[in-house]
Length: 85
Length: 312
Image (cartoon, rainbow over all chains, first blue to last red; front, side, top):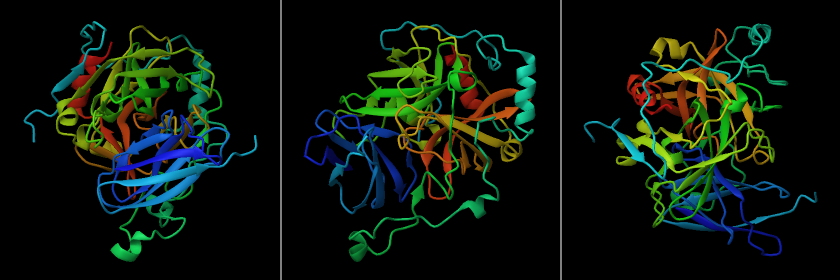
C-alpha cells in the first residue's frame, strides 16, 4: 500500500485532492482517491516495484511523485504549491 | 476459481428494484427527439471512422507500436540501487496525449456519461466514471461499486454510496445529481477479485432523461476492426471536466479488450463504445491502466445476459 498525506506549503492538510497512479509495474485500477479532511489517502498496490503518483487539486500545481514499493507499505508526504490563481 | 463467476451479486441499499422484462438490449436512445439532419451531419463529420465530432480532436496517426514511447520517470528512484531497474512501467497515457476536452457535455451522447463520486465503507472518497445503459442504470467498473483487496481495514466491500452526475462540466450539473446505494456486480469480482469480471452497475432511485448507450457482444474480428471511443472524467484534468479520446482496439481475449486509448485515474467505469451507423454500443468497460495498453472488461455474452437483467 502507498499511504500518505497531502498538504500545502504551510503544512495545512488538503482535502479533496485527487491522487492517482500514472505509472505502475502492473495494470492498476484507473480510479483516483480523494484525500480526507486530514489530507490522508491510501492506495492499494498489487505488486512491488516503481509507481508514480499524480496529485491534482484546483488552485495548486499538479505534482508527480515516484515511489518504490519494496515492502508492504510505503508512506509519502506530498506538498502542493499554489498556482497563484 | 468459482464455478460461476458471472453469478450476480447485489447490494440492495434502500431501494426496491424490479427485474427488466426486456428480451434484448435496449437500443441506444438520446432521451429526446433530435433532428435527423443533425444525426446525418454528425456521421459526415466523423468521416465514417467511428469517431465522435469533438472540436480540436484529431485521432493520433500510426499504429499502436508507433505510438509507444519508453516510459518517462522524473528521477531515478533510490530503490533502483537495491533492486535494480524497474520492470517496464504501466502508463495510462501512452505516447502523445491526444485527449480532448468535451466542450458541451450537456448534449447527447456526452450527457449519457457521468461523473461518479464514491464513498467506501471506511469513509474514503474516490472518483470514477460511468455510462447510462438505461433510464436508471449506470454501467461502471466493478471496483467502482465494490472495493476488493484494498489492504485497508474496513474499506473492502460495497461502496456505501455513489453520487452520480450526468453531463457534468466542472461545477455545472446540467441534469442535477442522484445518490444511490443499490449496486450490482458478479462474484467473479466481489468474491474472487478477478480483473476479467470487473464490471457492475448502479441502480438509481429515479429516472434521468439523458438517454443511454446500447451494449453489444461483438466477435473478436469485429472488435479488432473497431475504433474504441472513451469519454470520462480523469483526475489529472480540472475537476469534473469530461475528456474524449479514441483509437483502434489493439487486442482482445475472451473477457478483456485492450486498447491504446489514453486515460487517467478517475476514468474507471467509462464505456468503451463503438459508433457505427449513428448508434453507439458499449463493447467494454474501461477499468485498468496497463504497461503497453489500457484495458477494459469485455462485453461478452455473459455480460450482456447480466446487463439485460439489471437494466431498468
